[in-house]
Image (cartoon, rainbow over all chains, first blue to last red; front, side, top):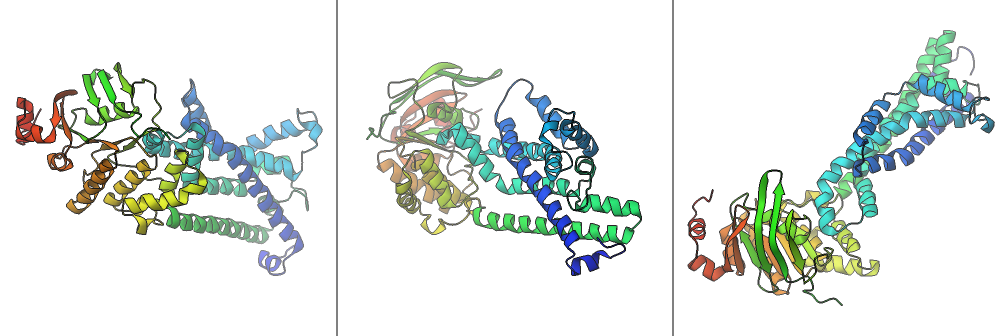
Length: 230
Length: 240
């Protein structure tokens, strides 16, 4: 990005570097939120519907993991993907894939913990009807996930928000490489350290605007769905 | 095609249900035959709902046994249950009935016609697309009955289906239950409304403290009760 340029100028001129940063930010965060949904929601449903020794400590740990410090996750993924680490041969360190992995680790506990709570609450409401309708175990899980879908949208938004706002983990595993792994948050951190506060602030406004737009779209979809299904 | 009354008679033989130190059903024996409706009456806490759940197979007794059509292990395929406060799935009225048909194994091609028929039968054809949770209490109860009928049950258990409903909604439910009973579905209904028990015209079972106090045809029960508890209950006295 040109030195000293204001964020408004960059947006109005559709600066290619800015567009690339926005594209990568959305790509990484959406992929991470998507993967976390695929992992977290079924795991949350499993925890909601099964009883086994040690279940409650698992729930406590899962809830605690919602507050995972991003830098710790970044360090752990760095050690995993570094040349001497167990997955070093994959050569993923300092790539967008590494950033997606780190954010997925951060977001999955949020999706799993919230899904567990929503689905368990719904199951308590539905269990008698399920028994009376002789609904099988797999169909129960599918029904609960489907019927909790509006609440799960909120959980997904919480996860996406966490991913989009995160900087500590991705700066460690992505390296903030210009044109390759630089995202909105890492760019803001860099511009702030360089003293270009106007540009950093402008980028922050762009980031917040994007998060608001994604939330507004999801909220609109949720409201429309609720009107149709109740 | 299975016989419509394959789960009948339902025999409860010395059934006991305990929850901790509390005895909810106390060595209760009862035979539910095909034919006229059976109405369970009695004060709150007398064990009516628990008896329905045991007879449906939703609750395993802690003592005694339950026999459905001569067998002890019968999945609740031909039995259906409508709860006092039925839970509406988060979908339309039509979607709720379609779901029940799917869980009952009805072929996909047949479902649309069956949904229309069942909604029409319970008087909700014009509410098909409405979210089920936005229906009134009486409409939700009728939808729950439609969902239960989707299973083509031989026995339909109804737990206080008219509780908290206004007279118009109560009449709609009672008319519907009468129609279902006339179609050879065995009705077993719990109620604390003696008026409902009279109007349904079937067999009445008076319960108190987890036991059957008196049972017999409604006409006999209401005109010449055999026990002091039944006389007091019919007179409106409180059984405690």
